Structures are given as structure tokens and as C-alpha cells.
Length: 243
Image 1 (cartoon, rainbow, N blue to C red):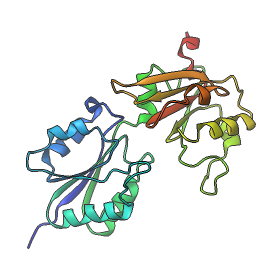
Image 2: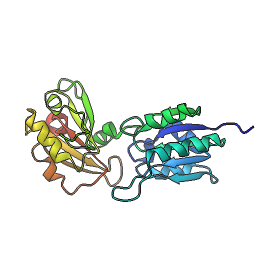
Image 3: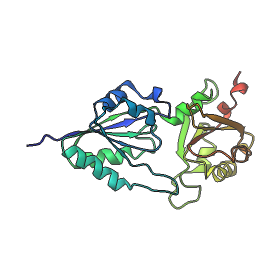
Image 4: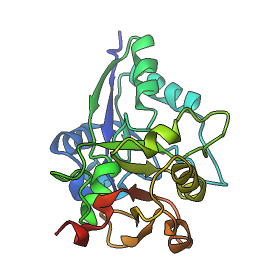
């Protein structure tokens, strides 16, 4: 009888392959099959065995896309065939990465699965730009939100008025297209339009670019920036002002 394989969900970090964890690298080195995303640090695939099977399930904006159900099925089918499967994604699997859906699919199919956390771009991209998401005496927390849908959208579950008065740094992932609406909603909720803000594109990569402005002007200042990018809204975005 063929032994069942396993699935390892590996968070690849924000882009620089040097930020993949040691455990993540070991999983890649041992994998029979690697199912990878567009935003995973693809240079890290050089660590894999020569005979590894690499399956690209990238979701390309405006282009081809692999459904989550198809991805779940690939994980389960390859593991059932006795393979060591790595699901390789950018950032951390459990921060807007649908890693929990993939873990549940494995659990329901009786597949052994484990999670290797990744460095989240919500912290790493600001850090690479010298922006701390917290700062003693200034802010005691940070809130990470998805900008995948704008304020007021039927699928949005965020209370922007509450965010505006939370006193935390606000970090926006997947918000390139919706940043203007998000900033407007925060201003409407009472956040000072002069609050410092920044957008970091390609965080931790050689192509990294940082734009700094205010809540009222960051959308215009970062108008030519495309995904992937992370927005930071709060006093910490003005690092020079912290001195």
C-alpha cells in the first residue's frame, strides 16, 4: 500500500529569498512537489532537488488564475500519491493568504499537514523602509487590513470610523487600487488629513521604492506605484519626525 505523503505550507516572506526561514528552506530542499505563487520568492526554488515537480498556480491580475478549489485539490492529490508537497507562498500563509483554507482541505482529506510561518510584508516592508509599526510613547499597536475591496463594498467587514480613532498604526495590504477610498474613509472617520503616510513597493527587494506623504496626499503621491505595495498610515510613517 502506498504511504500517504504530506503537505507543508511555507510562508516565503516579503520577497528577498534571504528572509525565508531556515525551516522553510529545509522543506523546499526535501519537497517532491512545490506548488508556488506569483509573489513567492522564486529564487528560493533553486534550493529544491533537480527532480522536483514545480507547479505554478499564480493568480495574475487581469490574466490567468487558478481557483482555490483547484489548488486545494492539487495539494491533496499529490499528497495522497505519497509525495512531500510544499505550498510556497509570499509573506505568511495565514495573513490574507488563504493558508487556513488549504490547511483545512488537508485536514478534511486526512492528509498530514504542517505550517511554517513566513515573515509578513505587513511588518517587513515598512521595516525595510526604516518605518517601525510601533514606537514607544507614540503608538502601542498596529492594525493590518486588506484593501482588496474598498470601504462601502458589500464584502467589506471593516469599520473605518473605528480604525480612524483606534490610535494604532494602520497597515494596508493589497490596497493599491483602493488606497484613495481608504484614505477618504479614514479622514471621514476623523483621522487628521495631515497624518503621515507612506507606500512601500517591492519591499525588501532591490527594486524597492518608498513614497512618503500624508493621509490627504499619499494616493496622488503614489499614483504610479503598482502592486505589490504596502501602505502605512500613522505618525510612525514620518521616521524623521520620531527623532
